[in-house]
Length: 494
Image (cartoon, rainbow, N blue to C red):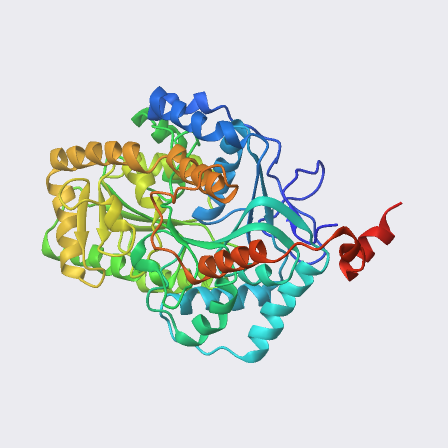
């Protein structure tokens, strides 16, 4: 029996976002398979053939993923697409989420913030009670074996040392740990160094004192999802019409969009101040809208309070709108990005900012901060504009540029779409995981080209152990039968 919740669809059962104690939930079909050929229109036949060659020696090999939520955030979205595509290449890919109560997710949200440098109080009861006790409950009845297991982010990180997951276990860190709060980093470091390797989005995000192999894998978007379908103007307006009517929005007026979860690092208040500044510098006719769109994620208990504070600061400004937990979310996000004059994403901390690629894929230019993975997607004056996340005047000036120069904005958007096509579509993500699976199953002993460090302490120890084992004198059959382990084996034989 698995304490981790496996994501099977059960007819007639309610669907929730994450697994609470004593609940079995989920609506991801683990048998879903997507043919690689379906991605040829986006990346070309040559790319798909390359992936098939990589996958050929890996048929029936297994790849397990573990995270903390079904819905909400880029990790879940990537897994929902990457697993079916991997299955299409013949990989036995699957996905589990851990169980947890509200206390657990409140504590792991603290972990998330502290790993990104925020100093906040945390107690031993939170670490050993809410966190480690929950990990213990999950591990107690869990048994997973796989050729490669990828555990995502801090929520399930400690599962690696409970002796219930067998195989090559890698930790995938989706956030920037380059300058973490040292209390939480020192707590998590022994767990992380117990992994067979760690995957980061960028080399700059790697925390200190890691003694394991390190790899770079950047997130990607799935062009086949409803969110990332390239809508026509007519299609987008038809999808948005109920919300435009409900919020009394004139679609002929320009729209600036800010789409993300409500999070202290997403810096929505600065976007709000910049938009207010924009209209004090110049009177626009027609006046633009600023639309905040975001869902409340189950593993982010702080989101609602941040949203309420943001609404209070916006006051009764008729040009600032908040769309929260909208119906048909993916359709709405894609449609809003398509019709928006520009997308604003000026995070103070950002693991990658997958939403930036989503906006660029809709040919919408982006005002992004010079932070984390945003700089890999927004090429200044090529696919959008880069700004300091605290520079309200600069953000307002770039908003004005998008409004005043629509032809330039359209050009930046087209450049952005092509940039995403080359670097940030789902087949590239799966390609890197196929290479890792080849490496860790011994099918290819060459270091992956996205390896970030040389021979590590953990690998050196394993080499020494293997050499010592080879140098040992093998026992005779009589001596072997006297060995305790062999006695157990012989006695257990029918």
